[in-house]
Image (cartoon, rainbow, N blue to C red):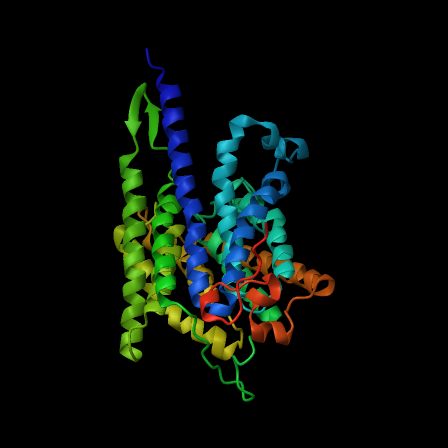
Amino acid sequence: MVDAAVLTEGINAVWVLTVTFLIFFMQAGFAMLEAGNVRAKNAGNVLMKNMMDWSMGVLVYFFVGLGIAGIAAGLTAPGGYSVAESFSYVNDPGAWIGWLFGAVFAMTAATIVSGAVAEQLKFRAYLFYSVGITAFIYPAIQGFAWGGGLLSGSGYLGAAFGTGYLDFAGATVVHMLGGVAGLVGAYMVGPRKGRYTSAGKSIPIPGHSVPLVVLGTLMLAFGWYGFNVGTQATVLAVEAGALVFKGEALGRVAINTTLGMGAGAVGTTAYTWIKDKPDPVLTANGLLAGLVAVTGAVPHVTVWGGISLGLIAGIQVPLVYRFVVDKMKVDDVCGVFAVHGSAGAIGTLLIPVFAVSGFSAAQLGMQAAGILVITVWTVVTTYAVFKVAEVTVGLRVSDAEETEGLDKGEHGVSAYPEFGTEARGGEGL
């Protein structure tokens, strides 16, 4: 006799592991997209940063991060907390699948930042920040929003509004956090040499490979199905003694992910075509912005809502990017704030407007409050971590290293040695 509870637990666990592996593949997408967006002389450096985001990040998140999330949740909701209980997952094999699923979200938040500060930030300073975001910057927000803390229905802020914060798969908890952190980091490290004239006019510095940008974008989109659809972690349940497949819930999440993605790319393409000519790099950013915008909304909004959120996110990409670069004078290399920051905020704020259940003023207020909390926390903590890094190890590479390229200056290698005059270094053993 098959135990239905054991069967559903096993199938759901395998599903979670499968989508976790898909989300991990997003690391490859980020690596390709960011490598294509920088000049050839810096491609190896940005790839190195991406590898260390994952490699060092999972260690930090295992020993520190998830425990901090539990403490942050307990401090901001009634009932208190236990430090020992918050870190109990470390020695609990039954908790390790859940930890791994949480870890790939944390690593995504960390990796977003590297695209904003590429081509001028020291490698050691980046590692310093990567530890900070995986140890406490992201985990605190995870605890506030998803761990039963401040922003949940039972948290202090959620109770005040009478409803919890809605962000299904991390449009703000992961993506906006990463986008805002990237903006702060890019501001603090300063623009690349030659990015602005003496009069403050921005001068484009194109990346070296549009094909890599588009390839990375499509790899990210593929992994995003794990990110969004995988968050619908219960695919099979036992209800009234019978097995029930959660196909409708999965379907809504999958269709809104797909429609938001398409609408984002169409929105950016239409806007840039009206203004000048359709730009493949901007269209790639629009596709990703559409995905970001619906990430928090996919189970909560109608299909028309999914399309609308993606379209709005796509149109705002070139507008917000130009504002950041031209008005704020922040050299956001990969445009991460427009893709992850503003798109995540807009998509999550508008969930009540397109909600399946109808509009709720209280929910809209809670969404605005949650976005404010995440933004303020991220700005303050990111600034503090980068400031400590600046004082201890410094932020920018030297002018000579920036001119030569961070591949040679920071790692002694060349990502494309066949185009240079020197043999590739760093052969190791």
